[in-house]
Length: 354
Image (cartoon, rainbow, N blue to C red; front, side, top):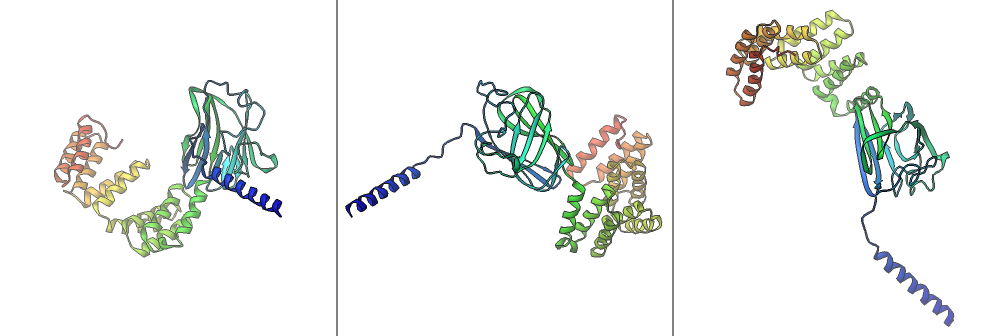
């Protein structure tokens, strides 16, 4: 009995000792500090969480990080990479999710591994049968020394980017791309099942997205019609006209455009002309400016439209005079300054449409 009591007392003391030690654990800085980088491509988020070891005068490649062996691509816990939507990595499909990111370095070629296990400590428990994807990439020399390991996003485009691990004097890039149009269309459809279906703006934006990319035009026309039904505006009528034109339905496009012109304000028409210029549709833009000048003479936008028409014709003096009239007519200092910049260009005989 005494032996049992003594054993129980020892266990209790041991438990208290362990608890005391546990309570005294300190939250101290990591030698390899934690970091996170994030990049959005269209509607897809890419997030990399990792630790940043230092070179600290050591030989890295083929020494601290051996060739031919799986490496954690960082320090401490798993380096992880998260994709909020399905992506392509080096042209190969990868589902959305959080992956453990590992690499196998070699002098001329690296293997980048996306593991289904993302909670491991380093690469010690890595198993190849848990791979979601492997891709081979080429390392490249860096122009500058990177003392601390880092991940960066380079060559950013609307539907792709390059993820680059950089450490010491070496960079290891791999490409990530998405199907922007498909994903965005799904997102638009989902939003238009909610409150967006009751506003003219959301439906018009969805139609504009398709029109700009020349995709899904039949559905875009339905969205444009629904937008007009919610509230008839120059914006959605002009969208509808452009979609009908893209669908090769010229008579309907002309009717929609005529109605859009009837209800357009000066600023709406002028802004539409500027948008056409941004889309490299200069001839169409000039037709709009002519309509503005005809319908809204002696107004700020009427004079600005005339200035652009005359500038395109090489009449810089006449264009400068029209721009000066516009400057005198505008009520705001900000717009006066903006127009002054146009006048300065015209006085230097520069075409303000370019």
